[in-house]
Length: 139
Image (tube, rainbow, N blue to C red):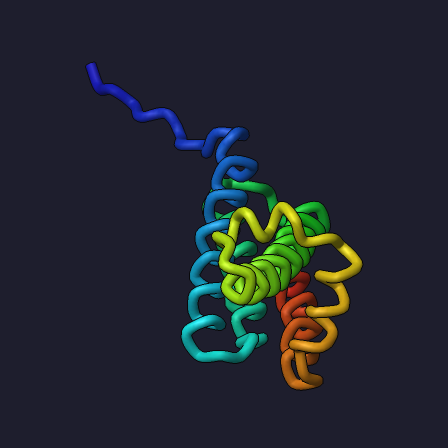
């Protein structure tokens, strides 16, 4: 009697779990790199878009526009998290606070102002390009 191996289908719970973990890890890497180099490193947004699309694909999310929208949403969230984290860390260092304490005290208006001031045009272009890459790679 020959045993047949059932086809492997990824679990449906995998993409929603894989994406936040991967996004947070990439955001932490981006924040550390930006703090080490002393500039925002906007090109990392493209890496975030590619990583988001790859995690959704490896997680088994079916091809199509829902996956592209999920990749764009994940990329936008990582970009926002990174800009918040960089601003909070820089302000926290100046005030003698831990980054997480500073992040909790940082208001959205102040964070938005700091992000606009800290990101030059080239980094904004990289972030915009990342959204296009997320759509293309996510489909």
